[in-house]
Amino acid sequence: MKSTAYDLLVVGTGFASTFFLKQYLSKAPATARVLVLERGHLYPRAERVKEILGQETAYAKLNPLANDTFENHNRGKDWHFSVGFGGSSNCWYGCTPRFLPSDFRMKTLYGIGNDWPVQYDELDPYYEQVEDLMAISGPAETPYPRKKAYAQPPHLFTAVDTLLHRQYGKLYISQPTARARVATHGRNPCCASAVCSVCPVDAKFTIENSNFRVYDDPRVELLHGAQVYGLELVQDRVRKVSFHRNAQDQHVGAEVVALGANALFNANILLNSGDKNPFTGRGLGEQLGLQAHVYLDNLQSLGGSTWVNANGYMLYDGEHRKEYAACLMESSNAPFFRPESGKWRNMASFRMIFEDLPDADNYVATTADIMKPAIHFKGPSDYTRKAIERMKQRLPAVLACLPVEQIIYDQPYASEAHILGTTRMSVSAAQGVVDKHLRHHQYRNLFVLGSGSFTTYTPANPTLTLSALSLLAADQSF
Image (cartoon, rainbow, N blue to C red; front, side, top):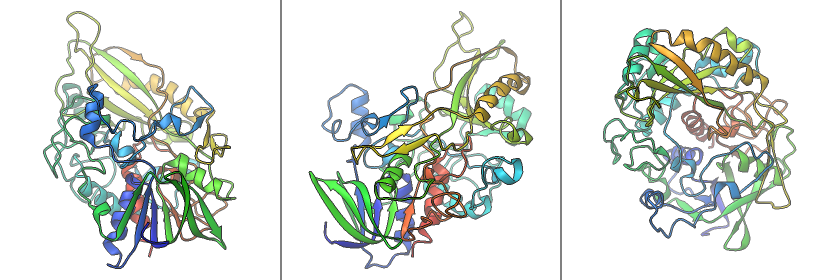
């Protein structure tokens, strides 16, 4: 390290940390001193493609496997994320719908959970900023209000998507996505090969290809291989950050600290540090998803220009959320075939994604290994399970504009790769851990970033929203 104290210390280099840092640097003076501590190392996309192809790469063993970094007390539940520079931007699939305005007002509208302390209109300009920075592809009309056109044109529909859009209009749209429709910012157009976790053509937005250059800024010092495990908390402030690097424990001071690890490790750091907020680590969750395969009579599902072509909102919002969860439909364009001669492509496939509710019995706890949190998850709520059964009752009517022969459902997926909760946003410490600006209710020079802050768990993908929240938080860091 070049110093023993910094103006800002950021933990992690994923979406939450990087968008926070970009906004901070846009307003910070030339004399600002920033330290970024990244647990992992850079694993370039080109090298990850080699690994997928079975080729040797020296980078493959630099970062630990995600499953080796925590204790999982429910082996039936997976938690997917990526360790290394850029965090889960390296493995995400680039789906970027906004939340609906109603998602922020679940208590007021439906008597469920709590309202978010930040509302849609406050987040709207930050949504726009992130959409421009990621060069999002999206349609002109959406089920949520927008003032500005997307940076890129929408992806092409399949034949099935075209019929559903004709029936439902802006309730069935080309999915807003960070998978490029046309070449932009050094990224190529999406190849629709459905191997998005390691994009073979570098079409999706990642921290590596973002061209933000925040980690090249002369004000920023980046240390790889530095795992943060604790904070020194004195008189309601963070005085020092403790981390392990090169087989040594080290400590450094900062005026402002921003935790940008994922919801598992942000909670572990706070718990290791003696944070007594009763909500810290509690309410761990994510959405629940399952696949619906729709066999069609004499209609082929051909066309489309990306992996998830469309989002359907027909089962998302409404009075039913008083009783059971919202469902977002994703039109899958991965290679799939109906196992009947002459009908190979006479089918469509939809991922049905359901919101869930925070539950104190789903939580992160410390272990004897200060670096390794324990994950306790009992399963999705009855609110979500009921929604699955109601979806199966309602979907045939929703798809009545298609020549449906039958619908076959898979079992729910073990993970949607979205880790939510554990440091929830709230009006006061009596309801959660951080305020509307992601500032800790007690430790006022501490920001806790990422989807751990979500008050409720909408079915929409979280990355766009958590990135927008990071911009909002950074504006409050001076």
